[in-house]
Length: 250
Image (cartoon, one colour):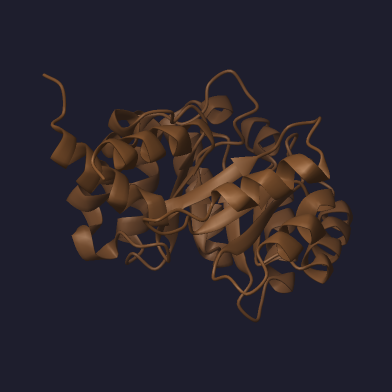
């Protein structure tokens, strides 16, 4: 059965402030990022953040001056290397350029090869730099980890390091966000007391897709927990459906 317009509107209004409106194209240009930022201003509110490659931070910062929209960027992306010095360099440059949030790719291959200590070093090095209101989201790349035990191990590394969000995916691998991986992540967050947030990213294109993750989070952590401080979607295509749902009910 199709979702009624009023229900679509309510869902769209709920999702919009949880959205990290994202453009991570290899051919992104300053004009494309400026246009993306301009689209974030809607009659119904704004997304939580704009997520762009580090070279576009300054463009986004200028375009979003005097707004409450945060600037997110990616480091160690998308390969998830195991060199802490690389991550430190990239993170320092991103923060200096004006990033409010850092989305760090966990060295997930090190977990698969039995070297979690190498992954831990990278996460701790980045965490030390993310202070004074800089949020750190740890991308687990759950589609590459695959097994629940590895996903739980990745969650434990992030939670022990004090990251602000656990994030499913880069969106750059064949299998990205899944409900099955989200269950493992949200259970780990709930068992840790709900301090850490959750971000679903990669392949979330429709309101129905997004509703799955909202329901999973609400069942484990409660409706009040779902806020921009604890819950995000990383998406671009989803934004178009949000706009359409809001326009048809205006």
